[in-house]
Image (cartoon, rainbow, N blue to C red):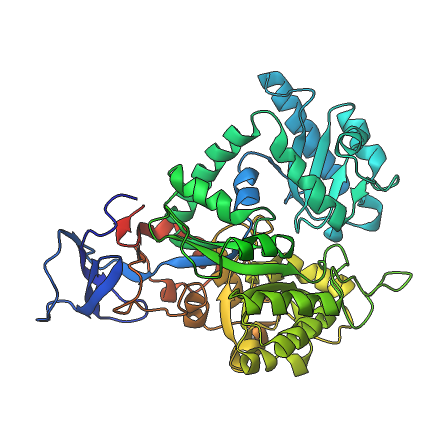
Amino acid sequence: MAGMNNSVRIANAGVPGAQTRVDIVLQDGKVAFVSPTGSVGREPAAETTIDADGLWAIPGLWDCHTHFTQWSKTLGRLDLINARSASEAMAMLRAHLDERRAAGTLDPDAFVVGMRFRHSLWSDDEQPTLAAIDAVTGDQPVALSSADMHCGWVNSAAARRLGVHVDERTGLVGELEWFDAYTQFDKAPGAAEETDRLLREAERDAVAKGIVGIRDYEMAENINTWIGRFAAGINRLRVDAGVYPERMQDAIDAGWHTGKTLPGSNGLGRVGAMKLISDGSLNTRSAYCSTPYSGIEPATYGTLSYTPQEIEEYMRLATAHGFDIACHAIGDEANTIVLNAAEATHAHGSIEHAQMLKPVDIPRFAQLGLTASIQPQHAMDDRDVVTRFWANPAGIPYPFRSLYDAGAKLRMGSDAPVAPLDPWLAISAAVFGTENSSRDPFQPEQCLPVEVALAASTAAGRDRLEAGAPADVVLLDADPYAQTTPEAMRAMPTHVAMTFVAGTRVH
Protein backbone atom coordinates (compact mmCIF):
# COMPACT_ATOMS: atom_id res chain seq x y z
CA MET A 1 0.00 0.00 0.00
CA ALA A 2 1.28 3.40 -0.92
CA GLY A 3 1.33 6.16 1.65
CA MET A 4 1.62 4.03 4.77
CA ASN A 5 3.65 6.73 6.54
CA ASN A 6 1.28 9.59 5.75
CA SER A 7 -0.13 11.37 8.79
CA VAL A 8 -3.90 11.56 9.20
CA ARG A 9 -5.94 13.50 11.72
CA ILE A 10 -9.43 12.14 12.39
CA ALA A 11 -11.39 14.89 14.13
CA ASN A 12 -14.66 14.76 16.07
CA ALA A 13 -14.84 10.96 16.34
CA GLY A 14 -17.30 9.33 18.68
CA VAL A 15 -16.38 6.80 21.35
CA PRO A 16 -18.63 3.71 21.60
CA GLY A 17 -20.83 3.77 24.66
CA ALA A 18 -19.82 7.33 25.59
CA GLN A 19 -20.93 10.88 24.90
CA THR A 20 -17.42 12.25 24.35
CA ARG A 21 -15.68 12.98 21.07
CA VAL A 22 -11.99 12.63 20.37
CA ASP A 23 -9.38 13.64 17.84
CA ILE A 24 -7.07 10.88 16.62
CA VAL A 25 -3.72 11.36 14.92
CA LEU A 26 -2.26 8.52 12.86
CA GLN A 27 1.42 8.89 12.02
CA ASP A 28 4.15 6.51 10.83
CA GLY A 29 1.80 3.55 11.04
CA LYS A 30 0.89 4.19 14.69
CA VAL A 31 -1.81 5.96 16.67
CA ALA A 32 0.20 9.00 17.74
CA PHE A 33 -2.42 10.76 19.86
CA VAL A 34 -5.98 10.32 21.11
CA SER A 35 -7.29 13.44 22.85
CA PRO A 36 -10.65 15.08 23.55
CA THR A 37 -11.87 17.10 20.61
CA GLY A 38 -10.90 20.75 20.92
CA SER A 39 -8.33 20.23 23.64
CA VAL A 40 -4.97 21.88 23.30
CA GLY A 41 -2.33 19.21 22.93
CA ARG A 42 0.98 18.33 21.42
CA GLU A 43 -0.53 16.69 18.37
CA PRO A 44 1.61 17.22 15.27
CA ALA A 45 0.15 18.79 12.17
CA ALA A 46 -1.29 16.15 9.87
CA GLU A 47 -1.05 15.96 6.09
CA THR A 48 -4.70 14.95 5.86
CA THR A 49 -7.61 15.85 8.12
CA ILE A 50 -10.89 13.96 8.12
CA ASP A 51 -13.89 15.36 9.98
CA ALA A 52 -15.54 12.25 11.39
CA ASP A 53 -18.53 14.37 12.45
CA GLY A 54 -19.48 11.94 15.19
CA LEU A 55 -18.68 8.68 13.43
CA TRP A 56 -17.70 6.16 16.09
CA ALA A 57 -14.05 5.09 16.07
CA ILE A 58 -12.92 1.62 17.13
CA PRO A 59 -9.69 -0.35 16.74
CA GLY A 60 -9.49 -2.36 13.53
CA LEU A 61 -11.03 -5.81 13.74
CA TRP A 62 -9.19 -9.10 13.37
CA ASP A 63 -10.41 -12.53 12.38
CA CYS A 64 -8.11 -14.73 14.41
CA HIS A 65 -8.86 -18.00 12.61
CA THR A 66 -9.32 -18.22 8.86
CA HIS A 67 -8.58 -20.43 5.91
CA PHE A 68 -8.43 -17.44 3.62
CA THR A 69 -7.95 -19.17 0.28
CA GLN A 70 -10.83 -21.55 0.92
CA TRP A 71 -13.00 -18.68 2.12
CA SER A 72 -12.20 -16.72 -1.02
CA LYS A 73 -13.19 -19.67 -3.17
CA THR A 74 -16.63 -19.88 -1.57
CA LEU A 75 -17.36 -16.60 -3.33
CA GLY A 76 -17.22 -18.53 -6.62
CA ARG A 77 -18.57 -21.95 -5.61
CA LEU A 78 -21.92 -23.53 -4.88
CA ASP A 79 -22.87 -22.77 -1.26
CA LEU A 80 -25.02 -25.46 0.37
CA ILE A 81 -25.27 -23.94 3.85
CA ASN A 82 -29.05 -23.47 3.54
CA ALA A 83 -29.77 -27.05 2.42
CA ARG A 84 -31.95 -28.70 5.08
CA SER A 85 -31.66 -32.22 3.70
CA ALA A 86 -29.77 -34.33 1.21
CA SER A 87 -32.67 -33.88 -1.22
CA GLU A 88 -32.45 -30.09 -0.98
CA ALA A 89 -28.69 -30.21 -1.46
CA MET A 90 -29.11 -32.31 -4.59
CA ALA A 91 -31.80 -29.96 -5.92
CA MET A 92 -29.44 -27.02 -5.42
CA LEU A 93 -26.63 -28.94 -7.13
CA ARG A 94 -28.84 -29.87 -10.09
CA ALA A 95 -29.91 -26.23 -10.52
CA HIS A 96 -26.27 -25.11 -10.33
CA LEU A 97 -25.22 -27.59 -13.01
CA ASP A 98 -28.14 -26.66 -15.26
CA GLU A 99 -27.36 -22.96 -14.91
CA ARG A 100 -23.71 -23.45 -15.81
CA ARG A 101 -24.56 -25.68 -18.78
CA ALA A 102 -26.96 -23.06 -20.09
CA ALA A 103 -24.30 -20.36 -19.68
CA GLY A 104 -21.68 -22.49 -21.40
CA THR A 105 -19.35 -22.35 -18.36
CA LEU A 106 -19.45 -26.04 -17.40
CA ASP A 107 -16.34 -27.91 -18.53
CA PRO A 108 -17.30 -31.62 -18.51
CA ASP A 109 -13.79 -32.55 -17.40
CA ALA A 110 -13.45 -29.97 -14.62
CA PHE A 111 -14.38 -30.46 -10.98
CA VAL A 112 -17.57 -28.83 -9.78
CA VAL A 113 -16.98 -27.96 -6.14
CA GLY A 114 -19.62 -27.18 -3.53
CA MET A 115 -19.19 -25.96 0.03
CA ARG A 116 -20.72 -26.01 3.50
CA PHE A 117 -23.30 -28.81 3.58
CA ARG A 118 -24.35 -29.65 7.17
CA HIS A 119 -25.50 -33.28 7.19
CA SER A 120 -25.31 -33.45 10.99
CA LEU A 121 -28.53 -31.40 11.04
CA TRP A 122 -30.33 -33.60 8.51
CA SER A 123 -32.71 -36.38 9.53
CA ASP A 124 -31.53 -39.98 9.40
CA ASP A 125 -33.53 -40.65 6.22
CA GLU A 126 -32.08 -37.57 4.50
CA GLN A 127 -28.36 -38.31 4.76
CA PRO A 128 -25.86 -38.24 1.86
CA THR A 129 -25.76 -41.25 -0.43
CA LEU A 130 -23.48 -42.11 -3.31
CA ALA A 131 -26.50 -43.13 -5.39
CA ALA A 132 -28.14 -39.72 -4.98
CA ILE A 133 -25.13 -37.66 -6.02
CA ASP A 134 -24.34 -40.00 -8.93
CA ALA A 135 -27.92 -39.71 -10.19
CA VAL A 136 -27.71 -35.91 -10.32
CA THR A 137 -24.19 -35.59 -11.73
CA GLY A 138 -23.48 -38.51 -14.05
CA ASP A 139 -19.90 -38.35 -15.36
CA GLN A 140 -19.30 -34.75 -14.27
CA PRO A 141 -16.78 -34.90 -11.39
CA VAL A 142 -18.42 -33.27 -8.36
CA ALA A 143 -16.99 -32.82 -4.87
CA LEU A 144 -18.84 -31.19 -1.98
CA SER A 145 -17.14 -30.11 1.25
CA SER A 146 -18.91 -30.22 4.59
CA ALA A 147 -19.36 -26.96 6.46
CA ASP A 148 -16.55 -27.79 8.89
CA MET A 149 -14.30 -29.02 6.04
CA HIS A 150 -13.75 -32.31 7.87
CA CYS A 151 -15.35 -34.56 5.26
CA GLY A 152 -16.38 -34.56 1.62
CA TRP A 153 -19.33 -35.93 -0.34
CA VAL A 154 -18.20 -36.93 -3.82
CA ASN A 155 -19.63 -38.74 -6.81
CA SER A 156 -18.04 -41.77 -8.42
CA ALA A 157 -16.43 -39.72 -11.19
CA ALA A 158 -14.72 -37.44 -8.67
CA ALA A 159 -13.66 -40.38 -6.51
CA ARG A 160 -11.86 -41.94 -9.46
CA ARG A 161 -10.13 -38.66 -10.33
CA LEU A 162 -9.13 -37.94 -6.74
CA GLY A 163 -8.07 -41.48 -5.98
CA VAL A 164 -9.94 -41.48 -2.66
CA HIS A 165 -11.74 -44.21 -0.77
CA VAL A 166 -15.45 -43.47 -0.77
CA ASP A 167 -18.04 -45.09 1.43
CA GLU A 168 -20.09 -46.99 -1.17
CA ARG A 169 -23.31 -46.23 0.67
CA THR A 170 -22.88 -42.56 1.61
CA GLY A 171 -20.36 -41.20 -0.87
CA LEU A 172 -18.50 -39.60 2.05
CA VAL A 173 -14.72 -39.27 2.32
CA GLY A 174 -13.15 -39.21 5.80
CA GLU A 175 -11.40 -36.12 7.13
CA LEU A 176 -7.71 -37.00 6.81
CA GLU A 177 -8.12 -38.28 3.25
CA TRP A 178 -10.35 -35.30 2.46
CA PHE A 179 -7.74 -32.81 3.66
CA ASP A 180 -5.31 -34.23 1.10
CA ALA A 181 -7.86 -34.56 -1.70
CA TYR A 182 -9.06 -30.99 -1.32
CA THR A 183 -5.73 -29.56 -2.46
CA GLN A 184 -6.13 -31.19 -5.87
CA PHE A 185 -8.81 -28.70 -6.91
CA ASP A 186 -6.13 -26.00 -7.01
CA LYS A 187 -4.28 -27.84 -9.78
CA ALA A 188 -7.02 -27.59 -12.39
CA PRO A 189 -6.45 -25.43 -15.51
CA GLY A 190 -7.32 -21.80 -14.81
CA ALA A 191 -7.52 -22.38 -11.05
CA ALA A 192 -4.67 -20.01 -10.22
CA GLU A 193 -6.21 -17.09 -12.13
CA GLU A 194 -9.63 -17.71 -10.62
CA THR A 195 -8.13 -17.92 -7.13
CA ASP A 196 -6.30 -14.62 -7.60
CA ARG A 197 -9.52 -12.88 -8.64
CA LEU A 198 -11.46 -14.29 -5.69
CA LEU A 199 -8.70 -13.44 -3.20
CA ARG A 200 -8.88 -9.79 -4.24
CA GLU A 201 -12.66 -9.85 -3.96
CA ALA A 202 -12.45 -11.40 -0.48
CA GLU A 203 -9.89 -8.81 0.59
CA ARG A 204 -12.17 -5.96 -0.52
CA ASP A 205 -15.08 -7.56 1.29
CA ALA A 206 -13.05 -7.97 4.48
CA VAL A 207 -11.90 -4.35 4.78
CA ALA A 208 -15.45 -3.21 3.99
CA LYS A 209 -16.53 -5.00 7.18
CA GLY A 210 -13.87 -3.28 9.26
CA ILE A 211 -11.38 -6.15 9.22
CA VAL A 212 -7.75 -5.08 9.28
CA GLY A 213 -6.04 -8.43 9.90
CA ILE A 214 -6.37 -12.18 9.71
CA ARG A 215 -4.60 -15.22 11.02
CA ASP A 216 -4.41 -17.57 8.07
CA TYR A 217 -4.31 -21.29 8.82
CA GLU A 218 -4.77 -22.47 5.26
CA MET A 219 -3.52 -26.05 4.88
CA ALA A 220 -0.70 -24.98 2.58
CA GLU A 221 2.74 -23.41 2.49
CA ASN A 222 1.49 -20.10 3.79
CA ILE A 223 4.70 -18.13 4.30
CA ASN A 224 5.90 -18.13 0.70
CA THR A 225 2.32 -17.93 -0.54
CA TRP A 226 1.75 -14.66 1.29
CA ILE A 227 5.13 -13.25 0.29
CA GLY A 228 3.97 -13.77 -3.29
CA ARG A 229 0.56 -12.24 -2.63
CA PHE A 230 1.98 -9.10 -1.09
CA ALA A 231 4.30 -8.78 -4.09
CA ALA A 232 1.27 -9.13 -6.39
CA GLY A 233 -0.59 -6.29 -4.66
CA ILE A 234 -2.88 -8.27 -2.36
CA ASN A 235 -1.88 -5.99 0.48
CA ARG A 236 -4.82 -4.36 2.23
CA LEU A 237 -4.81 -6.67 5.26
CA ARG A 238 -2.38 -7.61 7.97
CA VAL A 239 -1.70 -11.34 7.82
CA ASP A 240 -0.18 -13.80 10.27
CA ALA A 241 0.71 -16.84 8.16
CA GLY A 242 0.46 -20.13 10.06
CA VAL A 243 2.75 -23.14 9.66
CA TYR A 244 1.60 -26.77 9.92
CA PRO A 245 3.70 -29.41 11.74
CA GLU A 246 4.71 -31.18 8.54
CA ARG A 247 6.30 -27.93 7.31
CA MET A 248 7.86 -26.88 10.60
CA GLN A 249 11.36 -28.17 9.94
CA ASP A 250 11.51 -26.36 6.61
CA ALA A 251 10.37 -23.15 8.32
CA ILE A 252 12.97 -23.56 11.06
CA ASP A 253 15.72 -24.25 8.54
CA ALA A 254 14.72 -21.08 6.66
CA GLY A 255 15.11 -19.02 9.83
CA TRP A 256 11.43 -18.25 10.35
CA HIS A 257 9.79 -17.77 13.73
CA THR A 258 6.51 -16.36 14.97
CA GLY A 259 6.39 -12.59 14.52
CA LYS A 260 9.08 -12.34 11.87
CA THR A 261 8.10 -9.89 9.14
CA LEU A 262 7.47 -11.26 5.66
CA PRO A 263 9.76 -9.55 3.13
CA GLY A 264 7.98 -7.19 0.76
CA SER A 265 4.90 -6.92 2.98
CA ASN A 266 5.63 -3.37 4.17
CA GLY A 267 5.29 -4.65 7.71
CA LEU A 268 1.80 -6.08 7.20
CA GLY A 269 2.75 -9.75 6.92
CA ARG A 270 4.26 -11.85 9.68
CA VAL A 271 5.00 -15.48 10.35
CA GLY A 272 2.24 -16.86 12.54
CA ALA A 273 1.96 -19.81 14.88
CA MET A 274 2.41 -23.51 14.33
CA LYS A 275 -1.11 -24.79 13.62
CA LEU A 276 -1.68 -28.32 14.88
CA ILE A 277 -4.99 -30.18 14.57
CA SER A 278 -5.39 -32.48 17.57
CA ASP A 279 -8.82 -33.95 16.86
CA GLY A 280 -11.77 -33.82 14.48
CA SER A 281 -15.07 -31.94 14.63
CA LEU A 282 -18.46 -32.18 16.26
CA ASN A 283 -20.39 -32.42 13.00
CA THR A 284 -18.44 -35.48 11.86
CA ARG A 285 -18.50 -36.93 15.40
CA SER A 286 -14.70 -37.04 15.34
CA ALA A 287 -13.96 -34.44 18.05
CA TYR A 288 -12.21 -36.44 20.79
CA CYS A 289 -14.37 -36.65 23.92
CA SER A 290 -14.17 -38.35 27.30
CA THR A 291 -17.76 -39.58 27.02
CA PRO A 292 -19.41 -41.24 24.00
CA TYR A 293 -21.53 -39.34 21.51
CA SER A 294 -25.23 -39.65 22.26
CA GLY A 295 -27.42 -41.63 19.88
CA ILE A 296 -24.51 -43.35 18.10
CA GLU A 297 -24.06 -47.14 18.08
CA PRO A 298 -21.56 -48.60 18.55
CA ALA A 299 -20.25 -46.07 21.03
CA THR A 300 -17.78 -43.59 19.59
CA TYR A 301 -15.61 -41.04 21.36
CA GLY A 302 -14.08 -39.34 18.31
CA THR A 303 -10.47 -39.54 17.21
CA LEU A 304 -7.11 -37.92 17.80
CA SER A 305 -5.15 -36.76 14.77
CA TYR A 306 -1.85 -37.27 16.62
CA THR A 307 -0.93 -39.25 19.70
CA PRO A 308 -0.51 -37.25 22.93
CA GLN A 309 3.23 -37.89 22.65
CA GLU A 310 3.35 -36.50 19.10
CA ILE A 311 1.40 -33.41 20.16
CA GLU A 312 3.88 -32.79 22.95
CA GLU A 313 6.86 -33.35 20.64
CA TYR A 314 5.57 -30.85 18.09
CA MET A 315 4.90 -28.28 20.80
CA ARG A 316 8.40 -28.78 22.17
CA LEU A 317 9.87 -28.30 18.68
CA ALA A 318 7.84 -25.15 18.07
CA THR A 319 8.62 -23.60 21.44
CA ALA A 320 12.34 -24.32 21.16
CA HIS A 321 12.51 -22.44 17.85
CA GLY A 322 10.46 -19.35 18.65
CA PHE A 323 7.05 -20.45 17.40
CA ASP A 324 3.77 -19.91 19.17
CA ILE A 325 1.30 -22.76 18.98
CA ALA A 326 -2.25 -22.60 17.63
CA CYS A 327 -3.68 -25.99 18.51
CA HIS A 328 -7.10 -27.07 17.27
CA ALA A 329 -8.96 -28.88 20.06
CA ILE A 330 -12.72 -29.36 20.06
CA GLY A 331 -13.61 -32.35 22.24
CA ASP A 332 -13.11 -32.10 26.00
CA GLU A 333 -10.53 -34.91 26.10
CA ALA A 334 -8.58 -33.36 23.22
CA ASN A 335 -8.48 -30.08 25.13
CA THR A 336 -7.17 -31.83 28.23
CA ILE A 337 -4.43 -33.51 26.20
CA VAL A 338 -3.44 -30.24 24.53
CA LEU A 339 -3.38 -28.35 27.83
CA ASN A 340 -1.23 -31.09 29.36
CA ALA A 341 1.20 -30.88 26.44
CA ALA A 342 1.38 -27.09 26.67
CA GLU A 343 2.07 -27.30 30.38
CA ALA A 344 4.80 -29.90 29.89
CA THR A 345 6.55 -27.91 27.14
CA HIS A 346 5.92 -24.35 28.39
CA ALA A 347 4.33 -23.63 25.02
CA HIS A 348 2.79 -20.22 24.38
CA GLY A 349 0.02 -19.28 21.99
CA SER A 350 -3.57 -20.36 21.65
CA ILE A 351 -5.96 -23.26 21.73
CA GLU A 352 -8.21 -22.96 18.72
CA HIS A 353 -11.93 -23.60 19.25
CA ALA A 354 -11.83 -24.84 22.89
CA GLN A 355 -15.31 -25.98 22.01
CA MET A 356 -16.01 -28.28 24.96
CA LEU A 357 -14.05 -28.04 28.19
CA LYS A 358 -14.12 -29.94 31.46
CA PRO A 359 -14.74 -27.49 34.32
CA VAL A 360 -11.34 -28.33 35.81
CA ASP A 361 -9.61 -27.29 32.56
CA ILE A 362 -11.20 -23.85 32.22
CA PRO A 363 -8.90 -22.03 34.70
CA ARG A 364 -5.84 -23.68 33.14
CA PHE A 365 -5.93 -21.29 30.16
CA ALA A 366 -5.12 -18.31 32.38
CA GLN A 367 -2.74 -20.34 34.53
CA LEU A 368 -0.74 -21.40 31.48
CA GLY A 369 -0.99 -18.04 29.70
CA LEU A 370 -2.81 -19.57 26.73
CA THR A 371 -5.33 -17.69 24.62
CA ALA A 372 -8.74 -19.23 24.00
CA SER A 373 -9.33 -18.58 20.29
CA ILE A 374 -13.09 -19.01 19.96
CA GLN A 375 -15.60 -18.89 17.11
CA PRO A 376 -18.96 -17.85 18.58
CA GLN A 377 -20.86 -18.26 15.30
CA HIS A 378 -20.09 -21.98 15.52
CA ALA A 379 -22.29 -22.11 18.62
CA MET A 380 -25.17 -20.75 16.56
CA ASP A 381 -24.55 -23.27 13.79
CA ASP A 382 -24.07 -26.16 16.22
CA ARG A 383 -26.66 -25.54 18.92
CA ASP A 384 -28.98 -28.24 17.56
CA VAL A 385 -26.06 -30.58 16.88
CA VAL A 386 -24.91 -30.18 20.49
CA THR A 387 -28.26 -31.33 21.84
CA ARG A 388 -28.25 -34.26 19.43
CA PHE A 389 -24.73 -35.63 19.85
CA TRP A 390 -23.46 -34.06 23.10
CA ALA A 391 -26.57 -34.70 25.17
CA ASN A 392 -24.55 -35.99 28.14
CA PRO A 393 -21.16 -34.28 27.97
CA ALA A 394 -18.49 -34.35 30.64
CA GLY A 395 -17.59 -30.79 29.71
CA ILE A 396 -19.25 -27.44 29.04
CA PRO A 397 -19.89 -26.70 25.35
CA TYR A 398 -18.89 -23.24 24.15
CA PRO A 399 -17.89 -21.95 27.61
CA PHE A 400 -17.22 -18.35 26.56
CA ARG A 401 -18.24 -16.57 29.78
CA SER A 402 -16.71 -19.29 31.95
CA LEU A 403 -13.35 -18.76 30.24
CA TYR A 404 -13.61 -14.99 30.58
CA ASP A 405 -14.57 -15.18 34.26
CA ALA A 406 -11.61 -17.50 34.86
CA GLY A 407 -9.22 -14.88 33.47
CA ALA A 408 -8.54 -16.41 30.06
CA LYS A 409 -7.48 -14.11 27.24
CA LEU A 410 -10.10 -14.39 24.50
CA ARG A 411 -9.68 -13.83 20.78
CA MET A 412 -12.45 -14.37 18.27
CA GLY A 413 -12.66 -15.49 14.68
CA SER A 414 -14.77 -17.33 12.14
CA ASP A 415 -12.80 -20.37 10.95
CA ALA A 416 -13.92 -19.17 7.51
CA PRO A 417 -15.22 -20.80 5.38
CA VAL A 418 -16.83 -22.81 8.20
CA ALA A 419 -18.57 -19.56 9.14
CA PRO A 420 -18.51 -16.37 7.08
CA LEU A 421 -15.51 -14.09 7.49
CA ASP A 422 -17.45 -11.44 9.39
CA PRO A 423 -16.47 -10.36 12.92
CA TRP A 424 -19.87 -8.81 13.51
CA LEU A 425 -21.49 -12.24 13.29
CA ALA A 426 -19.06 -13.47 15.95
CA ILE A 427 -19.68 -10.43 18.16
CA SER A 428 -23.45 -10.83 17.81
CA ALA A 429 -23.32 -14.54 18.62
CA ALA A 430 -21.11 -13.95 21.65
CA VAL A 431 -23.31 -11.16 23.02
CA PHE A 432 -26.84 -12.35 22.25
CA GLY A 433 -26.45 -16.14 21.99
CA THR A 434 -28.92 -16.29 19.12
CA GLU A 435 -29.11 -15.29 15.47
CA ASN A 436 -32.60 -13.84 15.66
CA SER A 437 -34.76 -12.33 18.34
CA SER A 438 -37.51 -14.90 17.88
CA ARG A 439 -35.35 -17.73 19.24
CA ASP A 440 -34.15 -18.02 22.82
CA PRO A 441 -30.42 -17.63 23.43
CA PHE A 442 -28.29 -20.76 23.45
CA GLN A 443 -26.65 -21.02 26.87
CA PRO A 444 -27.38 -17.41 27.90
CA GLU A 445 -25.12 -17.87 30.91
CA GLN A 446 -22.18 -18.08 28.47
CA CYS A 447 -22.91 -14.79 26.67
CA LEU A 448 -20.30 -12.03 26.86
CA PRO A 449 -20.64 -8.28 27.47
CA VAL A 450 -20.45 -6.35 24.21
CA GLU A 451 -17.26 -4.54 25.20
CA VAL A 452 -15.57 -7.88 25.90
CA ALA A 453 -16.69 -9.34 22.56
CA LEU A 454 -15.50 -6.27 20.65
CA ALA A 455 -12.15 -6.27 22.44
CA ALA A 456 -11.71 -9.98 21.68
CA SER A 457 -12.13 -9.13 18.00
CA THR A 458 -9.06 -6.87 17.97
CA ALA A 459 -5.34 -7.62 17.91
CA ALA A 460 -4.55 -6.16 21.32
CA GLY A 461 -7.77 -7.06 23.12
CA ARG A 462 -8.83 -3.40 23.51
CA ASP A 463 -12.17 -1.84 22.62
CA ARG A 464 -10.79 1.73 22.62
CA LEU A 465 -8.06 3.34 20.54
CA GLU A 466 -4.88 4.09 22.46
CA ALA A 467 -1.69 5.99 21.62
CA GLY A 468 1.09 3.68 20.51
CA ALA A 469 -1.22 1.10 18.96
CA PRO A 470 -1.04 0.27 15.24
CA ALA A 471 -2.86 2.85 13.12
CA ASP A 472 -5.66 0.42 12.35
CA VAL A 473 -8.96 2.24 12.75
CA VAL A 474 -12.58 1.69 11.77
CA LEU A 475 -15.15 4.49 11.60
CA LEU A 476 -18.79 3.49 12.02
CA ASP A 477 -22.00 5.43 11.49
CA ALA A 478 -23.69 3.48 14.31
CA ASP A 479 -22.58 2.85 17.88
CA PRO A 480 -21.97 -0.91 18.27
CA TYR A 481 -22.74 -0.62 21.99
CA ALA A 482 -26.20 0.71 21.20
CA GLN A 483 -27.27 -2.36 19.21
CA THR A 484 -29.91 -4.18 21.24
CA THR A 485 -30.82 -7.10 18.97
CA PRO A 486 -28.82 -9.77 17.16
CA GLU A 487 -30.28 -8.59 13.87
CA ALA A 488 -28.95 -5.07 14.44
CA MET A 489 -25.49 -6.27 15.44
CA ARG A 490 -25.27 -8.62 12.46
CA ALA A 491 -26.10 -5.65 10.22
CA MET A 492 -23.11 -3.63 11.47
CA PRO A 493 -21.06 -4.22 8.27
CA THR A 494 -23.49 -1.84 6.57
CA HIS A 495 -22.40 0.84 9.05
CA VAL A 496 -18.66 0.66 8.29
CA ALA A 497 -17.82 4.05 6.81
CA MET A 498 -14.01 3.87 6.65
CA THR A 499 -11.24 1.40 7.42
CA PHE A 500 -7.60 2.33 7.92
CA VAL A 501 -4.70 -0.13 7.98
CA ALA A 502 -1.33 1.21 9.16
CA GLY A 503 -2.69 4.72 8.67
CA THR A 504 -3.77 4.19 5.07
CA ARG A 505 -7.43 4.26 4.15
CA VAL A 506 -8.28 0.92 2.52
CA HIS A 507 -12.07 1.34 2.51
